[in-house]
Length: 114
Image (cartoon, rainbow, N blue to C red; front, side):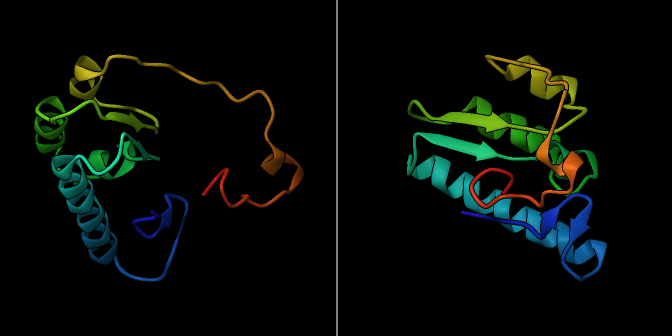
């Protein structure tokens, strides 16, 4: 389920306040689904950005993830993850791009980049 207003570098029209509201609404939906144990795996792609921009409260994210019920896996991607987020993570990786189709002008692919 796609939430938010697009990639961090290519957003739909609207103000930062509009995008912040969309990001927060998406986070609220994730919280609801976590509480309902609706899915086993959540991919919060590029989620570090709305946290870093102050659109979503870091401490709330840490609390929600630390106290989720069930055996849900939550994958968060994005650069510059806050140390508080890293501290509660079970697995942390750092990726370095060697080559990407976008380098050759290929647009993002449904199911891969979005």
